[in-house]
Length: 112
Length: 109
Image (cartoon, rainbow over all chains, first blue to last red; front, top):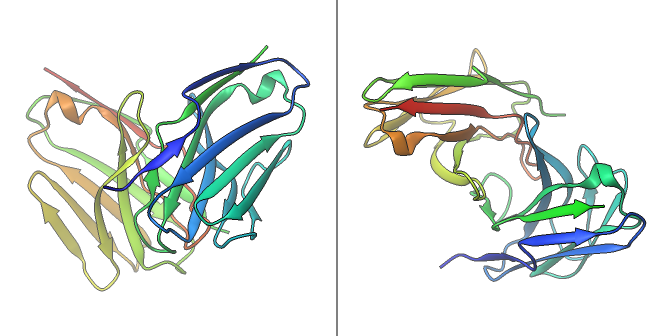
């Protein structure tokens, strides 16, 4: 069975903290993605990666960075968390372009 | 880059009615046209997809139709049921997968 696992379901962090959101997939997929979802705005792409150590900016990369040292793991880093980064974060993976994407259960991050 | 527009943004139907959601796209680089469904508290899941060498595909109560000339593809749900209530997305892009705002469908008993 296909599985994308996000390390936390709920997370509360303080303003200014460095935050790590982890995502692991067990399907040997090439592509991995990080999105944030806010009411009325749908899913917005933060970063994606189509290979190990490769990363590309999505539509809203400001305030975020990513790391993909191993194929199965894609980490989203908030260098200095701010309250406007309070959101639902969704990780996904796909075998390649033009194929089905599989999503994790999401991490609801609250920055106070 | 890819631009995704879905219409309508919200749709409310009575149980048993049909629902149609239309997706208009700008970039023709991808030949893959999927529809995803997101239920409350879950990540989006693929429900049906079509490739550009096919004009229509059906899977029980759902179907997708593609008009490449007009650059739009549509999701059709017949005999809607309350469990069809969800947000539906038509993402576009080859490696850079753009989802957009989605369509919120409410099916009332």
